[in-house]
Image (tube, rainbow, N blue to C red; front, top):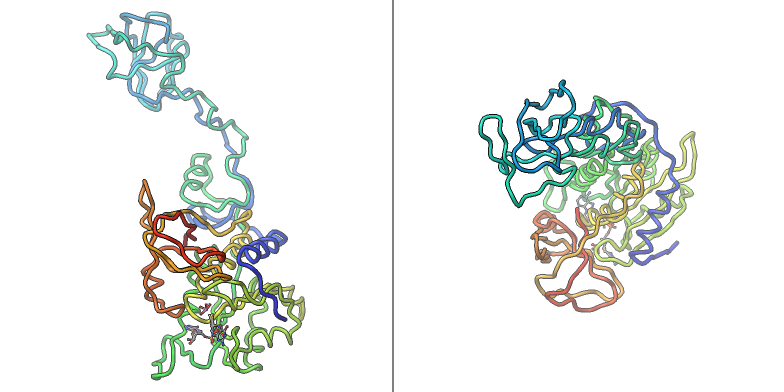
Length: 407
Ligand SMILES: Nc1nc2c(c(=O)[nH]1)N[C@H]1C(S)=C(S)[C@@H](COP(=O)(O)OP(=O)(O)OC[C@H]3O[C@@H](n4cnc5c(N)ncnc54)[C@H](O)[C@@H]3O)O[C@H]1N2
Ligand code: MOO
């Protein structure tokens, strides 16, 4: 039962399993409650967008071929429509941004580019207009009936805006996957308890609940499982009604690291029992078989060290959860930045280190945050991303372009 994968193999394997998942049930939610949810039915345009040839400037609708002096014969504001005859050569109509361009006109001259005296309009010389200038043609953004948002799209502000423009006050979304969270360890106490000197607060359940929410899931925090086979099994059974099981701790080499053993006695299948990465090496991924009326259930045994817990969540659990939530393939988000200092790699292990990215427009720089290892929650909170150092090199030099995992 020892199956250790390379970092990239493990990423791919999780995504392959995610691709085979059945979609969850759907529900309708009010538009603004859909932020972070995943669309279960495509959104289509209810009418042409724009619904008319739209002026993009305040100015004068006219014929692009006209030159010299034109006569202004009227005005159209946004929300109005020209009710007169189609525009004749030599004439112009004052028009506001967002108003429908009248028939006969094929360009809009910006107000700054003309001289107006009474109803006489002089076009600036040396500034010829082209047909279509400052006009967005009807239906050029979308035709009535066109799909504008695909099923499986995670809904953010851009999608809310587009759905609103199609007149939708609610959307069909997938239900959120339920994620059971089980922290394991005899040293752990809950937040409302006063820890003894040697005890540790159960922060991982909160970290995982927050990360699950960010990934579009609903967290069910179960009681701490103590480092005993019977207690672990009892709490794992309580988690069976959830869509995914997350355990933290108890996956390493210690005498009381019983998670794998207990899952094994429950006939679990293991897809990997470790990944060549640091932190996060002992991470476990598998599936419990259907039993007791419950369908098969995927699980992750995440290392208990709090930074390892979070790093492995970002790499493996979040992509799985986003797909469970209905999203099309949703791998971790990697980007590139320039290393601001030398960094040591660990040949044979992909390092995923808490780091700070400047998000500078021209040259984003990234620096590893000083830390005391994978228990250092304070360092992790000073970070805003993780640098990903490939497993094949001992040293990475300042100025090198390096991959970062966004969070
Ligand atoms: N001989 C070896 N020892 C260790 C190895 C190894 O390969 N050989 N691997 C190390 C690595 S890497 C990690 S990571 C840890 C992972 O161990 P476990 O997953 O078994 O986690 P625990 O031993 O239960 O706890 C580790 C650490 O994290 C703290 N912890 C655990 N749960 C929570 C929680 N819910 N909230 C906050 N903090 C938690 C726990 O107190 C420990 O300090 O093993 C290494 N050892
Ligand atoms: O996952 Mo462990 O953090 O490498 O200590």
